[in-house]
Length: 361
Image (cartoon, rainbow, N blue to C red; front, side, top):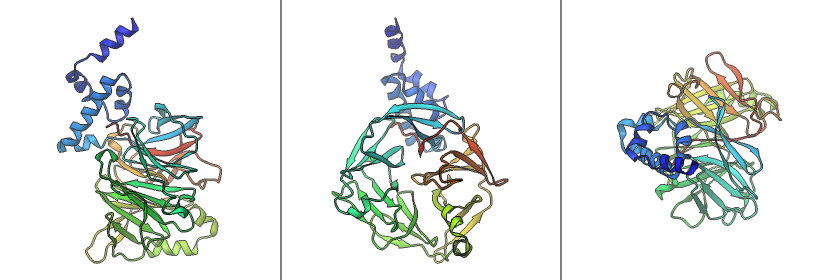
């Protein structure tokens, strides 16, 4: 009887399935919809492809609330919606000798601890792409414990660049192009704070808040004065305060490049104001309807009004470096720029890993 019922659901016409999807909120409901059967998953993929090809519905396509990847038992992970404070999807992944290094375009980036092979894995589609070992050409890079990884495009496109930044003492960056056979250093750069990619252009932030753009071939310095207030704080703050300090780069929903400075007492947000000869960082007092999701492995921005319950003018984050608010605290928080207060979220989450935006195609 159950088999007959499942068969009836899977035999629904595609047009009806697409009509149902028109009334769901991507991507939260799409995940559950795609789990029913292979036919329904195919309908979700078709709907997402249609949205990508229709510029008039571009805003709807962007309705991808970042989900928190959480490890809750050996080999089993869940994707957690921190806004609704509930698990929306669970999956198994054998990670023996593998470590998460980040996520980008809905793909997880993993590094093998012994061979230093890099693997891209899409937990939504089950696809995997294996890249050459990063330790083969640049052995010192592979030993760094923590890294930041950014993709220029969805790997399914077949044309992408993966940039990986080490968080060791040198803080260098290496890259792999989809048509290359090996990894290469981004030359003449050290002491990096963060990396972001906007329209296939990478932006690399050095410790003095100096920004470089890199298109995969040519590195260019973006003329901008040193952010003196931030630099003065760095040299005058105590060693404890400096320990709590972090820098993030993230693209806003409008395409602006934002720099977010985390201190012991809160966050400061700056926008890169572009000028031909002298760009500058301008402090942003309010994010308006924007919410940021910050992490050492990935940072994402969304329009809060697209998601019921998402807090506007706020920053969602959790500690991935055991810094905030105490060395052993790995809980999830939201920081309000309105009253500059912290609120703890999701008290049952014990082992957050990283943010990831759903990509079912």
